[in-house]
Length: 339
Ligand SMILES: Nc1ncnc2c1ncn2[C@@H]1O[C@H](COP(=O)(O)OP(=O)(O)OP(=O)(O)O)[C@@H](O)[C@H]1O
Ligand SMILES: [Mg+2]
Image (cartoon, rainbow, N blue to C red):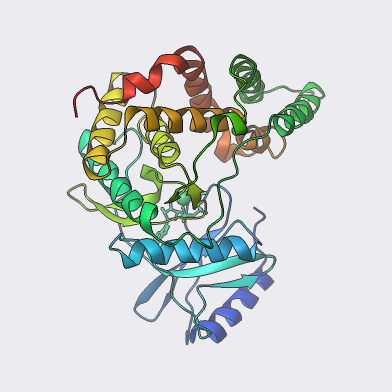
């Protein structure tokens, strides 16, 4: 995302004052953590706010996010709710994308390395509660998940290889990114799952990106708040469970600790929102196949030379290697033996 000019900040300040009635706005400070967008904190008198740039210009998407935030919050999920502006709207449009203002929360974050089975238990419990609501709430306006398309993957892989091959100085991270695409292609060839064959049942409103990166914890390790519903949609809940586990518990590496974390996560989830092995395994297949068709990370590194995304190329490489060799048996290994 481009850096904003001083003129943009001046215009943004006027807009915030007009829409939210802020009398004065103290300097915008960048908040680290957004992978694709600009986020800031600012103060008005004694109050501090979080200003989020949504990575979308789609009004329909914003509408979906707003509805999901309320659906979960109204049933007791501690979603950080946006502050309504004078039109009673949750977002405003500025320089080509949607933005929102939230109360600034001073919560604890937890890196994948610091994550304990206690955290994983709390996360599984929270996701179970989210899905209990997601299964029964009104989903009339929600968009169904967009899964994968083999032709799009092939076109993007070719385009990225074309750029890489013409690179005068091929960096190690770019070479690994290209290797990742090859691994993904091998998976797709060996597991030619079509969306139609897997027949996903989109029956649950999901958070969309429920990982340790999108919650704040209390000092004693409970989930204090949940945020970033940018990818909310209706999908099979097994998809989100598998996604959350494979990101949250396997981001630091692929070892015994990963399996302990995932066992704690899944046991805790199942205690709140039971799910058969068949449903879990089906969701797992859908998530893994979806993941194998994604190229956004490789695009960031090869096309846009994003430094911020480079470490993820290596963790993605580890995950891909294991998923390729263990795909057939992994769902069984992850699902608790005795609940
Ligand atoms: N209300 C808040 N108060 C304080 N900090 C926040 C708040 N909401 C989010 N953050 C911080 O800002 C970071 C980015 O927020 P968020 O995940 O909503 O944005 P994003 O642009 O979608 O980011 P990403 O690409 O990482 O998913 C979070 O990881 C968190 O550390
Ligand atoms: Mg986030």
